[in-house]
Length: 310
Image (cartoon, rainbow, N blue to C red; front, top):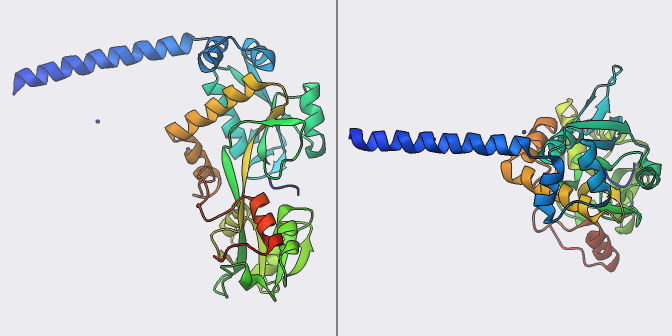
């Protein structure tokens, strides 16, 4: 989400076989021990103490209740039969498994009511590609980032590229209304901004040549390209926005356990694998290039006239 608007001589051989067998038995024993470990015990191992607050409730319940957007492909969608799918949905299920929980219950979220819904206990955590920059609400607490959205310019395939902010000057660039993309472009001097109700409409105009470019998320561009849009990415990124799980404030134990789950997924490669699965090979879990600033930093530099050349 922006600011609205992821899948190794006979004696030696004998010794080797014995050692390998012993290792296999030890590994199996470890797996059995891990499988019998309760969620409360797993939480305690992460925290260094028994879980408190909502974390304790979730561990005892054995179910993680997650808020998701039903119309946010490829992050999350639900079909007519009530089956949920998408990057965020798969991430939620993987996180619950790492946390030692038995099930995941997914409930529909309303973006405008996320803080209130979390406070009321409608769900435990929102896992829906929520950005933490700019901070959407002081009523929310965020786990460690699990993905990054990078703002890039899509241009007509085969047409002129736009690789720097200076090259946007004098051009008409599209952006979805009420987004960080709109805010960034309107802060830049010399850029004519055309607002759209959706990126699909803007990118259709880019593909047909009616629009010089559209500033949007790299994931959106990738998705449209996969669908056959005649567009190309022309720069490494103007800014990035971290995305993280959101829960209500005051739940430091839950935030710590969720962050540990994200760290585990990064380490075992499952987070990158899920990203490539749902984003047509794009790894949104990878940190942006050092030259790409955060949104807040980029906006401040544009306003001060110090945004770096790319």
